[in-house]
Length: 243
Image 1 (cartoon, one colour):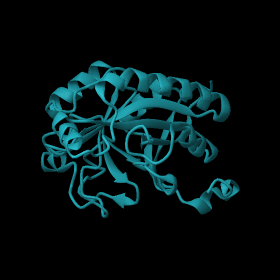
Image 2 (cartoon, rainbow, N blue to C red):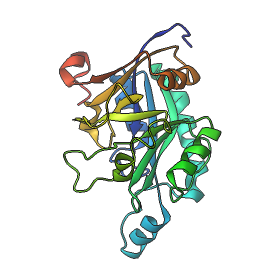
Image 3 (cartoon, helix red, strand yellow):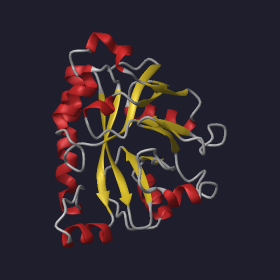
């Protein structure tokens, strides 16, 4: 593994068909690996109890990793983590998107080891994640152009209160740039919120760091050598056969 400091192309918010994404895990790993991404975090949804119960009553797909399946989920990520490194030199970091659609907050956790109940208050969720030494990101804390409702409204409404609670705030997501989250006041990242094939061409984070998980997390927390990058297909023309 390389240990010298370098600029790494990262995406910390990626979904598969294990929750509500369209592609299976292996295809997602191959897609990001062939596009030269250095670091990817798979962050499938875990969802608050009230939302899960409502989906069950309505006969809807759960679109989430349930608590009883969580360790199996991590095992799948660990297996793909090894393959991602061997085939692409890409770091895969296990993560989740803690999804509370009842009280309207979404939290991305990178390098997660244990299940955390999305029904808990924000402060308790963050505390439990930091006990695991996970990187904790406020997910899309503004309304995206395509959203009918603002799923992280609670984070947006309490932005000043939670400013230092999170390790970073997602200031860009997919093709949206959130002007309400200022880069001068908030530690920040940018991510694709990947769900389907074309989402690979979207916002990413550039981090200057050693190429290992702990160094990457620490670089985000310090937020000094961090930039955002809007990735487009013509920037990677040698990979045009992927899509």
